[in-house]
Amino acid sequence: MAVSEGLSPDFVIGDFDSVTAETLSAIPAERQMRIAEQETTDFEKCLLSVRAPLILGLGFTGARADHTLSVMNALVRHAGKPCIILDETDLIFAAPPRLRLDLAAGTRLSLFPMAAIEGRSSGLRWPIDGLVLSPDGRIGTSNEATGAVDLAFARTGMLVVLPADQLDRAVTGLLSAHGLR
Image (cartoon, rainbow, N blue to C red):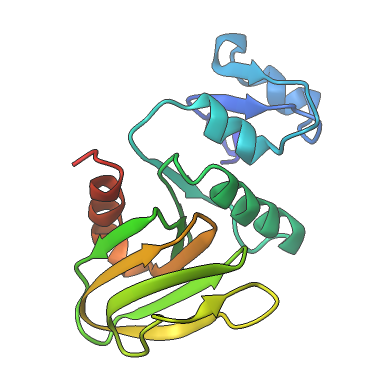
């Protein structure tokens, strides 16, 4: 969001270590939440501060790989907080222990583990039953749905990646898994 182009965010959360004084002066003080500690990223500060059934994060992929990776880390560290990261191509969220996604056959679904995780699946072209997925071993990219997908994981730490046009289905599945729908 470009304040220099006359746009103004509804609210800004972070430590403000990378924003100019000029930009901050264009945002009313009552719409700023400064959290000075340096133990968490600005994205994580938002996850911990925003109270909503679901958070939709835009602009958190692509610009810098280290920032994108820190967002993925925060997603799995706070997997109990439903949040979907969306860009032009994909959407990404931390899988809850059980998840049902009503997907059409042929829909791309990738599973990327941020820790060693076992799981079960139905509705995937290549089932994950009996596999241990891990970031330094087997991962589950470019799988595809054969219809509705049911996933169950032994622990948190799994990221689900879907095409961006599956946002409605991801929202429905994620809210349902968290008992919010």
